[in-house]
Each structure stands twice: as structure tokens, then as C-alpha cells.
Length: 98
Image (tube, rainbow, N blue to C red):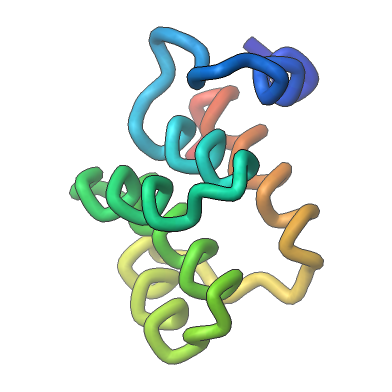
């Protein structure tokens, strides 16, 4: 699945089957369910989960917490728009480059 196909699933009632928790978290975030997205990201104990977790705290405005999670993901805090960062993360995860 590529980014365009993933974004097309945002019209569905549930995230696409077969994607991991970090992508499910991004899907729920795009649906406006920050809490559900946060629970999924927090449950993923790897760098992909930490990256999504960081993005979610940046979106929330908790930049100190976001910085902690970017560090856990071995990434620097994005200076892109939130929409652009969402797309970057989703594309990387979908391609296995997370």
C-alpha cells in the first residue's frame, strides 16, 4: 500500500487490515481521535511507535514531551506543518523505512 491508497482508507470506518499500530494510530489521528491514536502509539515499543508518539505530542502542543519521543525515535523534531509530517511518517512506515 502506498500513501495515496492509505489516505483513501480514511473514508472507511476502520483502518486498513494488516497495518501495524503506528499506522493505525496515524489513521485514527486523521479521524480526529487523538486519544485513540495516542493509546496505539504508546503501545508500540519501538522507534516507529515513538515517532508517531512524538508527532502526536507535537500536535497536542506538548513540545517537551514531543522532544522526548523524537529522541526515543532517533529523530529530530519536525519543522514541517503537522499535515506534512503526518504524510512523511505514513509514507515512511508504509515503505518500511520507518
